[in-house]
Image 1 (tube, rainbow, N blue to C red):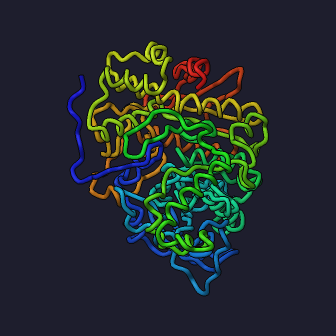
Image 2: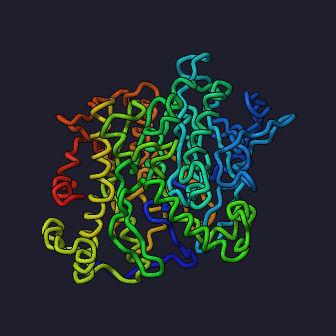
Image 3: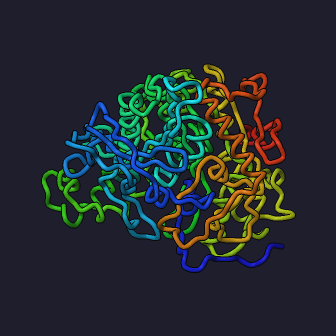
Length: 552
């Protein structure tokens, strides 16, 4: 029997489920990019094709250019419109500090420092000449952060180790979130895809400007985790993104990812949202119209042009409804549901690396226990199964028995049905048309970032792999938490993973290792752990045949 629940004093944490917010507030190596930049020397100015001159900082083996605008501020009349071009500037722009994260809620209120003016990106490149010669262009890796498309910040992820060790240029970016990024309405073009269009605007910026940072615009890898992984998959199936990137990495996010619904004020509900993670645009617009009428009941009740009035409202007035929005299919950006696009081969056929962690849903299970204030015991577990599966509850419990630990059984069940098996579906669909590699992050001793709120064993939970690839910035809303470090064995695993990720970015294959592609006949999945790499039968380990027979 596990011991009583634990809490972190003063944390006051409320994190969007299925996001990467568990990593948002602490460092994995005890480094703060902002602090590093303060002590670093200035770089020579770089001239951009769009904008003007930028000057960054040099330190820790890399050059950083932070807070470069890739689109105009989406304010006023530009709220809920496709991103417009950024204006040029005269002189040298100071790009030594990241821009504000996009507007989002933390602990029930606006995250301090977040802003609607947020369409900026950061470029991190090795300071030394390229390993293959001073005139050699480096691969470019563009990172999409997670956070349920409702929270997150590109600058939370410091890719200095990846850039330096892997000899690549890394771009991190902010894109509109929640209501500002994925709102739909009958009067809006591009409903439900504004955040996706932001990502594509950033990719076009990379195409125009990568050369000036020593990057190869003909070799761009788009990678992301959780909602960022879903967004990578969305860009794979978006005709508008064709030619903007040349490889893709999907980490714990896919075109088949399961998204549980949540009852407002009533605690978690564990049924799956139909069509997750995509929704038909007609549905998105209908829900948006209902929401707009509710928002407009005050300031805009008598306005003849309600959308124009809503565009003039202070952003803070909209934040209370800024989460719960998803990608809209049937749009110009996403003509097809992502699953249908993959099934029929109508997607951008670039090499793909796809995977997840072994124990994804221990993270969300921890939050279930924390938010309900009690452990999941055998009776509670069975009640959840009945609530979720009805007449099939007994069949599910037979595969995931409550003993010896019902909370771990619940976590294993949700890991398999929400994350692992959907990831396998996407990987299998991709492999029919393009070269695809698969992995599973399996270090069950991975650090928990001091944000683990109960004593549920974390294992290799959702987002656990991020500290092996990035140094994670310390900042609001978790600035009171103590940084953690990787052990020497974990550092070695992190170096291996960086080699795999950047090797894949360089050639479309994880270089320097015998890693066969994933195919329907030979579904090779490489298990990554501190004990060395191995092969795992992921479909069997995660009972995917059972979920297929049950209908998902």
